[in-house]
Length: 366
Image 1 (tube, rainbow, N blue to C red):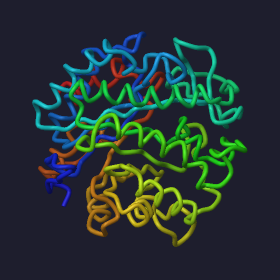
Image 2: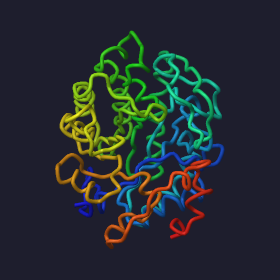
Image 3: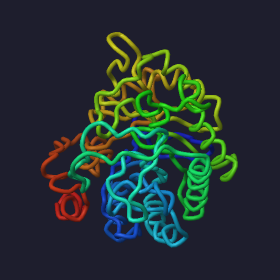
Image 4: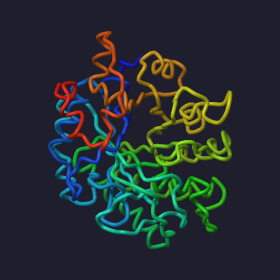
């Protein structure tokens, strides 16, 4: 089943394997994509993946950047820099989707501002991630006002249009892992007492407005999806307080939005996500939204991944760390060859950039 083609909004992808979005902090200081990134993404395409979702790309020259050397789609120059990467991936017969990410309160570095914004002035839990260049606690963000709401929505819209112009096959809105859109969904991040805070129905409202404005801009025939998780980058144990019922509220709302699919990520995509004997996150997304689902989370094992497809819990399978260790993972599985183990120390430390790791290894030189 993993090698069956899949039709996504009249776009045929050659198999169900997706490279999951992973922060690589390898762009130029000004956010410009480069040849190192081109080699990196093309290697996955050569390795047999049907679809690639990029690392999180910041959409504006204001508050969205989260990491030093994070790539951007905030300017036309950024978009031009992505075109050779997109073209190289397409030459291998692989689709590539741009993930648009606003860091919000989880800001570790931003060349445009020393200030961060969030639904409420709540400091993220945990520490900044050292392998992405951070250290110490996160700054306390400023609570967003009406101007910020307008600016954030405009930034997603304009970056989505730049992605389309650069040739990307779709855009993914990053609504997971504790970044801005997820902060609206999260009870302890979102302490607002207006229409955007309080109940899960209210907390999902701003996310829906972003989706609707992006859809209106890019048109009905351009794929738009959203990534959803419970866990955060700096709070990996977080669960929605309302459990499966809160999941129902969120995913039903997304199912009524102008989205083409949902991308779920969980520590283990095949495990109960809301307590013992409950649904997986992917299963909840599929059932409650009615949309196609990309599932991510410990799915390097092809037997485990195929089982999720067979059970109808997911339509596509996204692989993260397994893809870093095996950029040719689909080809290896197709040939019945053993997969390499992911070594966090080797690939992610001291910094998770590309140049210091994969591109100096034989496996990434093809």
